[in-house]
Image 1 (cartoon, rainbow over the protein chains, first blue to last red):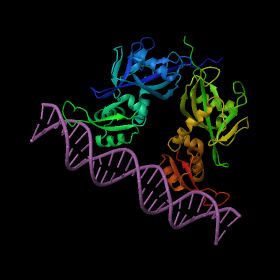
Image 2 (tube, rainbow over the protein chains, first blue to last red):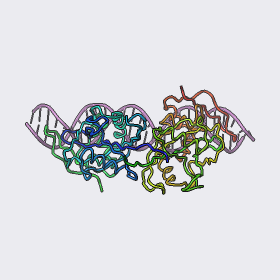
Image 3 (cartoon, rainbow over the protein chains, first blue to last red):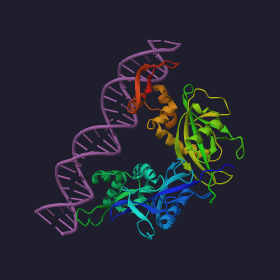
Image 4 (cartoon, rainbow over the protein chains, first blue to last red):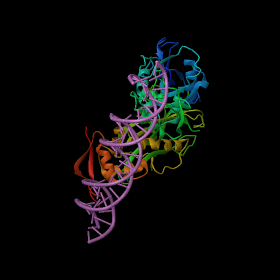
Amino acid sequence: MIESTPVSVDVLALRFDPTARTVLLGVAPRAQEPFAGDLALPGVLLGRGERLRDAARRAVRDKLGVAEGAITASGQLTTFDEPSRDPRGPTLSIALWATADPGRLTGGPTTWTPLADVPPLAFDHDRIVADCRPILADRLWRDPAFTAGLLGREFTTAQALDVTESLTGDRPYPANLGRVMERVPGLERTTQHAAAQPKGGRPPSVWRWAT
Amino acid sequence: MIESTPVSVDVLALRFDPTARTVLLGVAPRAQEPFAGDLALPGVLLGRGERLRDAARRAVRDKLGVAEGAITASGQLTTFDEPSRDPRGPTLSIALWATADPGRLTGGPTTWTPLADVPPLAFDHDRIVADCRPILADRLWRDPAFTAGLLGREFTTAQALDVTESLTGDRPYPANLGRVMERVPGLERTTQHAAAQPKGGRPPSVWRWAT
DNA sequence: GCAAAAGTGTTCTCCATACACCCATGC
DNA sequence: GCATGGGTGTATGGAGAACACTTTTGC
């Protein structure tokens, strides 16, 4: 029997905060050595026969204190295999994304930090975040599960602008983003309009997923 | 100590055959149960601390009999985590691609089958091939390592047409493919022309990678 | 009215697709 | 010459980016 490399699942847990108008990444201080006390992505060792999605949910629940019901979607990113990424010995890290409903979020030791400005993290987690951000930006408006997971079943143009800016780094013209969204299968502009921003401005349209 | 899921690396080993004018996939009959005798992708269990690339090279060498020097490039695809994919118990399968130089290929029990027409394979390898083919098609002309690995340092327009057809399923117009290739960084059309096809026709241009 | 922010319409550019036509080879 | 097949030029359509101008809100 060959001794195999342990596999950990590390999660980029994302949540859109409509008040702060940014996408936040969930990180938590590590409870144990190594890097005890340092911030890190939620991660767990993959159990035997466990599916990646389930491990990701478990990581988010145990390490961030997010109820499983609040996790709206998840998916695979890439695998990191540098043997020295964990000082305890070689480990494989499979990165997944997960989106959380900003609704009920039991406190916990979680720090939600803007995705655009993540503090230094333990292990090679800085690299994981850096490598995966472009992948996430690419998924937006292309992968409906990811997009709907982040924005919810119903959202406004203003929120869509904020999310896009958080992920890609720059803010699209509302007109152009509207045309992109028109072409997303299953997404429709409703005739409703949300309340305007506190500072004023025209009230944005409400968008809804078909099914 | 938690018992972890064993990780196998399964490889889509690709080789361009200029004579047959198609991209071939390397498969070999399994030596052991389960599925002994059935064709399967070359795969090995990932050793502790072993890098994915190295495991892929090992798989191609041990299972296909391809010399390591003949492997020109490799890269990551996706991970398959259905717990029932191996009857012996849950295993993770990380799929990688690898390209082989059609030069020296010591016989071995390898079958090289056209990528467009792969026979039934053991385990879930049919699904792996089906899921990964579009990813490979997308990599062509975008990932220089992959493209150069398949076509070599120097190749003709005719070969480029054949490879594109094998991966995507339909044959582009020579004119359009030429313009795509002009825009590939590091790839240049030389002033040379190769010999014409046996049936005649205009001799195709030779393309070369810059460095 | 004024500032803020979304929506409408228009233009421009780039790229992919398609095809008519020209050119160079084997036979 | 004729079939074969790559190369040149050209047109068309769709997507993205940029921006003037209009509309609807808060104050």
